[in-house]
Image (cartoon, helix red, strand yellow):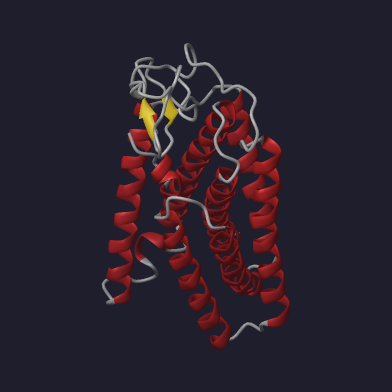
Length: 287
């Protein structure tokens, strides 16, 4: 089964006999249950569906050039740091105006294009990932400032909310209250795709004047409910990020995969932050 996170779609999840979702490298060459180990010469790769990463698989033996948690943390700090720097610069330099809003939309589109290019590449390209982070930061900086003008303090509260939600999701994952199984990923992906499609239809209806106040994304009770659902979907993607990182470290993913881990976490955190910003605005508007 492919990963529900498009960032890791080329390193997708596969279902094992034990029912768990395991990390599956693009170049499958499993030996002893490790997707990153090289099979002996002349020997066919092991069946990727015949192992359980929580029971029978053996972690990769120590070797150089493999992904570590330090790699993931440092790469994530770089990508998130780039987002923050871009956001701060945009906040300080660009005034709240129609021109700035247009620049934000342009930066957001560039970030989306860079995201798509990286998502469909076989290997991570740090320049693309950092470029995405920079343009995404500009977009977030302008949008956050616009929200702050209308709802004072909303960006700061959204940052705190994003940190709280992310920490709670990590705790739930580490305590195994959430288990990333193939069934879990399949159901979550179905909900996520349905959500995106409905939001696209809603956007078209709003653009062509078929709905007032943003339709499903209005600043009212319905918009609040949709926002909560969007944050839950973001949490779902976070659990896939955590599972991918955990399996990549356990089974010896190449060090370059840490860039993809950072990329996936950044994309997901940006999603959660944007939805949290809307929720804070809705709550302040109802005070």
